[in-house]
Image 1 (tube, rainbow, N blue to C red):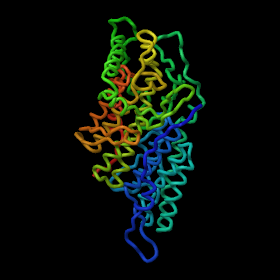
Image 2: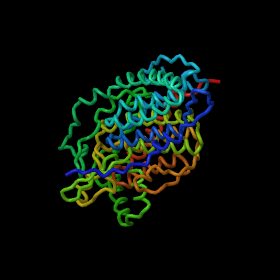
Image 3: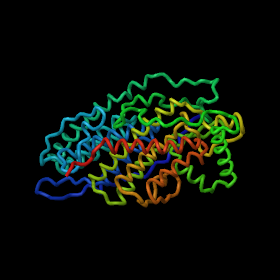
Image 4: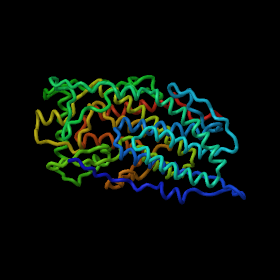
Length: 451
């Protein structure tokens, strides 16, 4: 019997519908529709909750974040004197621009574009359309002319982004063969307990990149050669996982290492077996955690609507390309997870602190994504940006404090060792791989018009 135990974040969107639509420049007949950055945060939060409900894998979740943000960015910055269009900067993105007029509310158009694209990417469309329609009703009553003009502008961009999105090879990868398991090769990935799930997204490297030249542009150097000889580099890394996790378990459930591992777990679907029952705990992905940090930084700096959309867009593009880069290496190296080897050759009773996710080991996805996202946020908000990470509060985990985005990324990466799910090379070289993704983005994408 399968039952679901899901914890939902208390979202702001219902309150925002009632409280955060403010009036300005009142006339006798209609009122100006004012859109705040809090409303954008609320809409991103609402999409995140739907993604948790629908259970999307980390790579797919990154795709769901990136396209709505790009649509919002383009609708918002049509004719902007500060922000530059991403048209002809991202791969195969060529947009026709909207003829902006004074009757159009760009912030409103941006939010409409976001929701229109987002609904095409999720299973539970009704959860988003219901949210959207409630907002539409409020906006239409405030100023029907402004709403209609803004809606035209928003849909002008969303329709083009959807068309571009639908040509990124995602649909084709849905029909490609499952990952081939080579059962006679001890170095190759095998399904792991408790669910022994098939490897997810083995063809993600075929998804069109956003700014990378190719999925393999930042192919990391090879991991240590597989060997179970005691003096080999690979065996040393395997023993590090085993000994570190044994030491952590001896310290007990309250150890700092376990706190770090659980805080950065970000496994969207954890199976827990109790007798004949299997429970599923659903939560956010690694990309969602960094999107949450982006929100924290925006709110902490009181970023206006324009900077907020810019931050989400830039961060989500980095995360999306990071997943493509990482998954390209995962299924090239196809490396076995520590759990498989430890149970077979060292200790059949050993269990990792975290549940091993269902895909090959090298490189570490969270490390690559954290490297890219942390560099992106540092570029936007500056180094030594101190913040309290409250992202995991809805899942019963306490706040963690960080002195910078880079320090948060380092902790996220090493959490995979503490969790018993990655070797050292996947962690360290994964961070570098993600940092290289950011460097490429920083060279290739210009967000600001020259003065």
